[in-house]
Structure formats: structure tokens, C-alpha cells
Length: 224
Image (cartoon, rainbow, N blue to C red):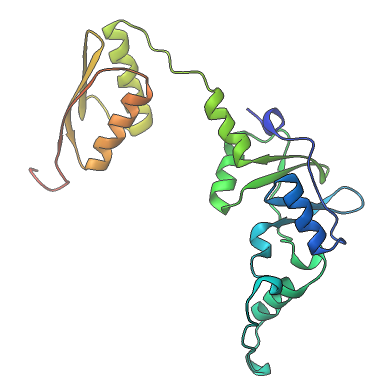
């Protein structure tokens, strides 16, 4: 699945030249927590988010103590500009991570997680054509079809066996799978409770009703 399949195309954006208060009003009116900032050519030049506005002078109860001139750093100056600047260009984040319409959704999800951001502008020739948010990606979970496994015991065993090897690297020498009347039993030895839990999650994700855990947890070095 690609960005173009889930992105919002009717994107609320803002100009870098408008005032901060107007930008906040746009956020509140449209119930969004961030706005792409686009120039007169429609190219993305920044992002303005709620996080960029949390240190505004307007909401501080008292001014911060000023450092002596010799102690003021570049970071102090940047914070001052963000706290006091009147226009979006002064406050917005300029290092914007973007994606293309043909970018894989899985890659976008990884970018959102790695950079701890909530949305990614989608561009074509640097011009804004859409946006993908965390919520857009979460909808995929609701719409995903449920897992469908065969009903025969041997087919279920082979399916579980395949997933154990592919997802967790567990061979038949480490864990053994048996199935009787649809109930799965897993025997064997694992190195930690975390791996044991991962096996349970794997089996449950297949949508199978019965599961019997007969695994033994033996940390490395014990019983060797």
C-alpha cells in the first residue's frame, strides 16, 4: 500500500508570512495539531505544530531569567525567536521530512515512529499534494482482513511452524508444534519469558481459539 492510497488530499496549509495567532486559529478551527507551511509556489518549506508553540512568551506566567551576554548561546537565541517571533516563518520547523505519493505506507510509518512526528507531507516536485497522519495509518488496522487459517490440524500445524521460523527464527529443533482438534500445543525450550510471550502473541494473532503453552524457560548458560 502506498501513500496515495491513504493520504488526505484536501490539506489545510498555511503561508510562512502569516501571523502566529492566525495560524493557531486555523489549527483550532480545523481541529488539527499541525500545519504544512507552503510558499507562494505551493512548495513545502516548513511545518508548524502544537509542539512548536508550547514555549511561547504568551503562555508563560513569568519571563525566563536572562543570561549575561557572554552566556547566551545559539540555542538560547533560537528559543527566543520561537518564543517571541510574530510570524510563522520564525516559529516553524524548517527541517521537514516528506514522502512521495508512491512511498510505501510501511516506510512512512517507520519514519513517523523514528522521528516521533505525527504527520508527513506528501509532495510531488516539492509541491504539496497530500498528507499522511498517524490516524490515516491506524485506519489500516481497522480495515485489515482477519487472518484465515485452514481447519485441518496438519495444515494449522504447518502454518504455525512456518510463522515461528519466519517471524521469530525458531526452528523445529527449538520448539515443537502439535495440533489436535484445532488446539495448538507448543513444547520446547526458550531463553526468556519475552520470547515465550512473543510465541503466544504470534499464535493468538493467527486467530486460533485454543492454545496450550508447554514451553520451558531456560536462560543461556543454565543446563548447558
